[in-house]
Amino acid sequence: MQKEYTTSFEAIESYDHLDETEKKLFDSAQKFRAIAYAPYSNFTVGCAILLENGEIISGSNQENAAYPSGLCAERTTIFWIGANFPDVKIKKLFVIGAPREALTSVPIPPCGACRQSILEYEAKQSDPIEIYFASLDGAIYKTKSIRDLLPFSFDSSYL
Ligand code: THU
Image 1 (tube, rainbow, N blue to C red):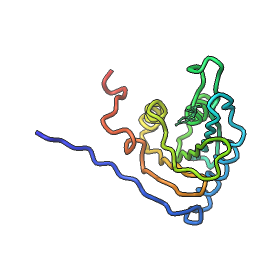
Image 2: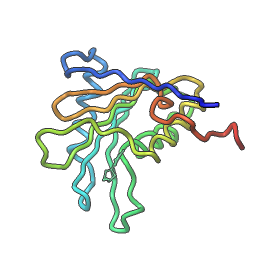
Image 3: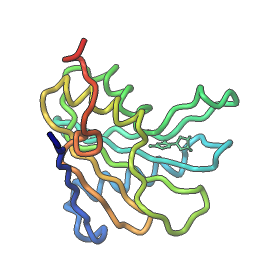
Image 4: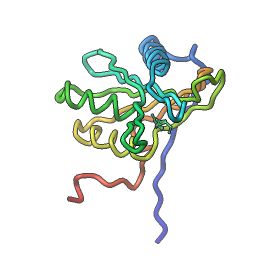
């Protein structure tokens, strides 16, 4: 028997189509991308996360001379939230990444390891996390849940 997962995403045309909170997330992700520590790849990524208490927590990718010891912007940010706001739900995660000096880009989706980490927090809070990934020029893709980016996922229910 053939089975299927259906996932979907919304394509938002430009920054102007974002609401005020989403604009703040975009701006914060951009601000933090500018100060990313990415001297090895020069691919800078900013992440901004909206909590249910209204706070926006942001972060960037952090690289290391021992390359695998570095960490993506999404996990840098979400792990900090896990440590500092363990009981506060996460509503939205916004990510923008591009080569450091790029003027234009395409929306870059979270890598596989980040998807798995985001899923952990979505499962823990039993509420979906909306994921946005944007280009520098403001083309934005949005999903309603990390599960749209990670169908057929492994989680604690299998342990
Ligand atoms: N990177 C992120 O920060 N997030 C992703 O989802 C993809 C990749 C970072 C890791 C590394 O510092 C640089 O981008 C190049 O891979």
